[in-house]
Length: 107
Image 1 (cartoon, rainbow, N blue to C red):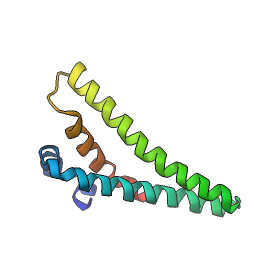
Image 2: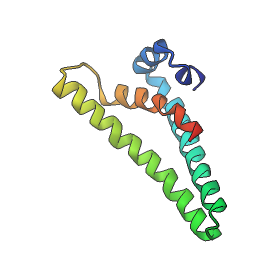
Image 3: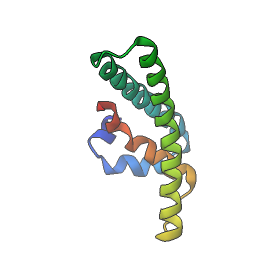
Image 4: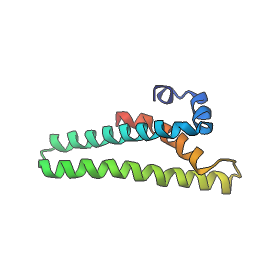
């Protein structure tokens, strides 16, 4: 994640071709999704919302982040391979897009 935050270009080449990096991507996406859910929860708490609403919002935010990544990486794959004639698999696109979500840690 640190290399992704520093925009280390070589990381994306490594992740693209390393099939074993899929586990790492799942961890990165889970950490980012949890951080975003926590941020939403703290915002809701500061705004004085009820605890039940905060918990539901946090859980929804977690799943929205995960589903959003799957949808976004598939769209990137389609545009990149069909429109721009790029060469990649869906898995390669998913892995690189997953690591690209690392800055979401701060949201």
